[in-house]
Amino acid sequence: MKSMKLVVLVLGGMVLVMLLSVGFLGSEGSVRAQDGTDPVFVGAGDIASCDPTRPGDEATAKVLDDIVANAPSRTTVFTTGDNAYEQGTLSQYQDCYDPDSNWGDHKAITYPTVGNHEYYASETASGYFAYFGADKVSYDATTKGYYSYNLGQWHMVALNSMCEKVGGCGATSPMVTWLKKDLAANPRTCTLAYFHHPVFSSGPLSGGVNSKMKPSWQVLYAARADVVLNGHLHNYERFAPQKPDGAADPEGIREFVVGTGGYSLNTFKNKLTNSEVRDASSFGVLKLTLHPTSYDWEFVTAPGGTVADRGSYSCSGGSEPPPPADTTPPRVSSTGPGANATGVAPGADITATFSEAMRTDSIDGTTVKLFRAGTTNLIGAVVSYDGAAKKAILNPNANLQLGTKYKAVVTTGATDLAGNRLDQNSSLSGLQQKAWTFTIRN
Image (cartoon, rainbow, N blue to C red; front, side, top):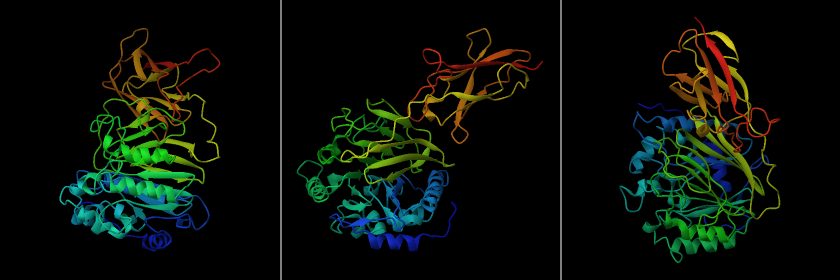
């Protein structure tokens, strides 16, 4: 049976609920951090199961606990749908999402969205609305499942991507009509929307583009919205700002797919043009810090709390420029064994520690390699990346041969979180890989 723990955030959550009005908001309906710092918005989708063989939800809940406890301001938790598997019934919310996964510990400060699984047992997603409360997650206290609120200086819009269940998805549907009116009533510098089904994804389920939420995207783009958060695909993907047709646009909408709440993970299929970062190997949560005219993001993996992706960007309606871009290439700062080492144990792992955090998906058998010195014969091995230590680890499939010299290589395909490729010696022309040799003991 999964572990359980005491709910400890009820009082803080009650204060937040008193400060936040859900529905159609003007500029006065804002949530503000008590100590004046910028609000934190954190969460994921595709989360909880009572299946003891699926512990990912407990791991992400622990990371969520830590972020909420350590944030310098009031924190709001979001979900991007499919919150309680398999059918989103009230009992599955009560037994699996809360308290089994411990995401329910933060119910009072959670502003969720609904997914397709919530409709499996009920045409009206009754379990979702009973658990969170229709007055909290629908602008008119019905089961429409779309609403808005202000968080600091940001306008936040939660939509129902199961729009076919609530009147349709098209440009004249009730939800899109409401969205147009809501955005017109809330002309903020920064706007964020979140819902379950992504319009864009490199994952296997959407075929690249899911068109049913395109009318909502078009309205958001016309209103100069800045960020869209989604789930449904059980992986993490970050896109560059783009138009509704997928063309790059520095003042367009940046989409994050964060279906990494803990249920399972999906692989990627075909990389879309504006996809910047993809991670199909880690559960985790997305943490956004919402400044008055810009935002910071961190994808924090679970277990362990490693930041696998981070960055900052200005809002399209803001005057505050984004921070200077990171253009410094990473390098290997130390190796194990060291260069020209002798007497190395035949079962030793080969490691390369980097000068900065690296993209997990850039550290694999194509970028970290081992050869018998003087040959092009690749030694079979498993390559992994320890984000906390910023270290690549190459574990040979078999013990290395006694008395033999080997050459290890980290290629320039290894990249940091900003996308800069490895350059071991920037004083030389072109990118330089890292290579070193060592000799196994006799």
